[in-house]
Length: 79
Image: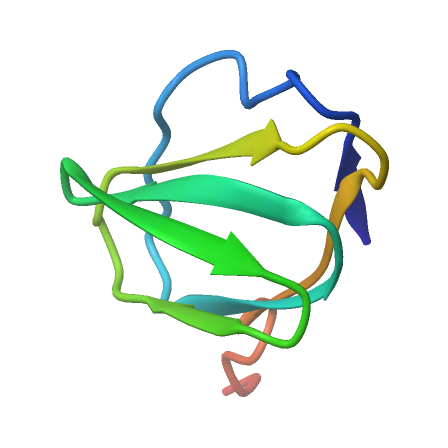
């Protein structure tokens, strides 16, 4: 679970080598996906393709922006 107090954000725009997602469980924010801004809030799900630039910015006055983050990792079968 990632959490950002209102006014907080990722320190920089990042990318990942795998697809991943975020399910928002609290707060409101703006999410940057591939240099496009999207308003997000509790209950939203964000799907991110591999190598897509992204960042979260918490907005609002009370609740932190919190989300459950998931990504496919360590799933290569041993040969």
